[in-house]
Image (cartoon, rainbow, N blue to C red; front, top):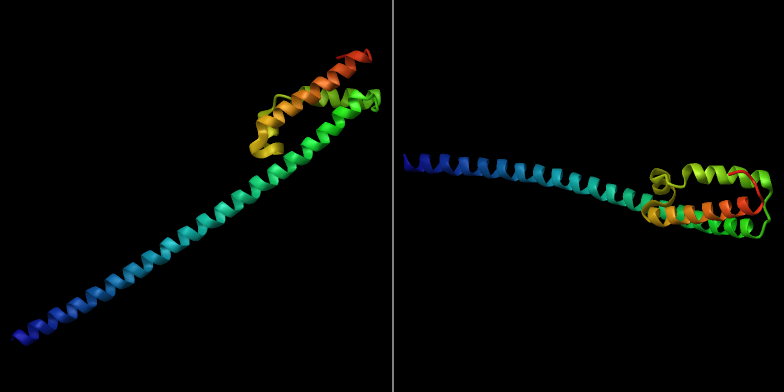
Length: 130
């Protein structure tokens, strides 16, 4: 009788151990899937931040070239008016700054203000309507 009881207890232990190992395996697989998704998300976020920073640096270079052109009067009146109105409309737009400059958006807003001031100064110098 004791042998049968020990055999049943042994088999129950083996079945419990197998179920526990299967559960542990499923948990580890689920955990790996979550980690892989988070790694993919981190890589995607890094790529987006890097791309926005690159675009922001390119726009910064372009903005500095535009400021030099405006200050040296190498731009026509109609282009000057069109660009002035664009900067006047979007110089305080945080959403546009975040889209264009990424994590450097505050610097982008300062750069936009600087470009707007250069356009405004040139408009006043040429006696064009603000």
